[in-house]
Amino acid sequence: MPHCRMKGCLSFLVLWLVNKDSMTSAEIALELKKRKGSKPSPGTIYPVLKDLKDKELLSVDKNKRYSLTKNGKKELETSLNTFFETFYDVDEMRSSCACNKQEKLS
Image (cartoon, rainbow, N blue to C red; front, side, top):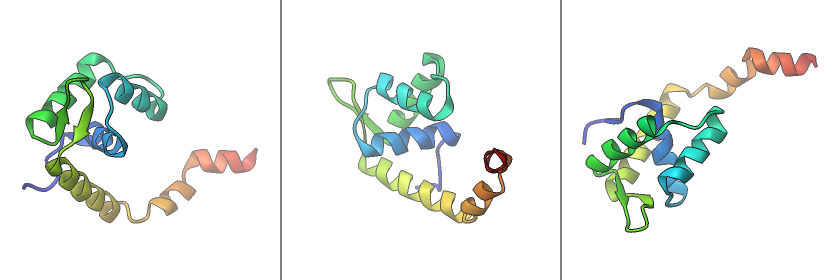
């Protein structure tokens, strides 16, 4: 399987969310809203869900709940490893963030 075949952060987040529990597209959109501050439009989320389903990373049941497939779990694990290898210094990045410095001044 090619390394990290997904189209960016949104696909990664969808796999991460669905890994925790099967979800409908509306539930996925609400979880994304919590993280990003705005709910993705259907024109944004449905193509991602279709792409992940076409790549056999997600399956959908009769109740329209999305779940990770075996390949989806492998892809998520590969993507998580890549993320942590790339951002091994994420704690340092967080501590140097201007928003954290602003909070400390308050």
